[in-house]
Amino acid sequence: MRGICLAGAALLLASCQSTEPSALDAYSRQQIDDGVRQMASSVARDITRDGPNAWLRYFADAPGFFMANNGTLQFSSYAEAKTFLNEFSQGVAHLALTWGEIRVDPVARGTAVMACPYSEVLTDRKGLTTQYSGYFTGLAVKTDAGWKLRNAHWSSPLPSP
Picture 1 (cartoon, rainbow, N blue to C red):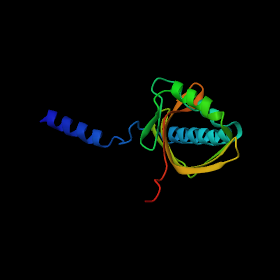
Picture 2 (picture 1 turned 135 degrees about the vertical axis):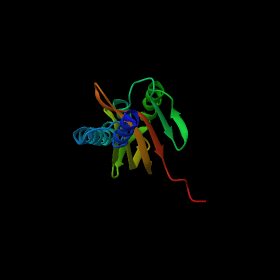
Picture 3 (picture 1 turned 90 degrees about the vertical axis):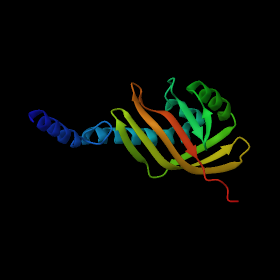
Picture 4 (picture 1 turned 30 degrees about the horizontal axis):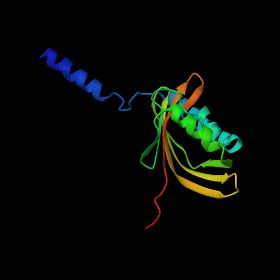
């Protein structure tokens, strides 16, 4: 009987545990939220000031990095992103990135999902301006060099039929 009571008590205690994946305290959640928001602000500032190559400061130069765009794998590695951005940047005179309301969901210590609407205005070297908008999601990780995007996904609305 004692074993049944102990098992019941253990079950009761286990059911009272937090359902959050990492059971982060409020302080840790706030630190993660603040860090990811600061990274997002820096991304928009640096892209607008320095052009598309500034993304490389915020992509995790790690084996797991990837980026998708509208359901297609855009880059399967940091090296692919770097090669593309170095080439792409040559044709860009100016790029302005603006985030909408940012959602940050802490997942574990040093890890969070970032999600928000975005708007970009790209001016090429010929002076042609193109506007893009949609929704961005990414997994942000805290590294020794600050917050970085381990992976990212951009989606834009499909044209109306």
